[in-house]
Image 1 (tube, rainbow, N blue to C red):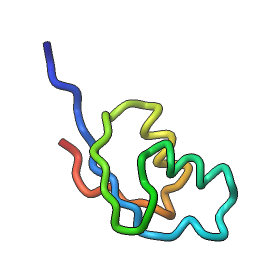
Image 2 (cartoon, rainbow, N blue to C red; image 1 turned 30 degrees about the horizontal axis):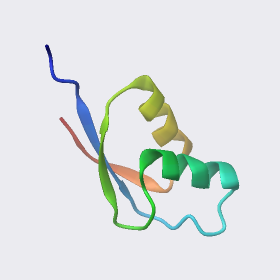
Image 3 (cartoon, rainbow, N blue to C red; image 1 turned 90 degrees about the horizontal axis):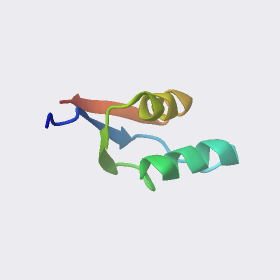
Length: 63
């Protein structure tokens, strides 16, 4: 069984004052505050979520 690719994402900006849809997207990614990092599976769905909040997060590492 092959190991799936991982992507590490960090929240770099606050969700305060952002539309509810963007807040829920951050929550779906597991990001709740600035500086929090999450290792996520590199799938088209996750990439789409990151694209929706690209101004609030940054990709740290792609494994």
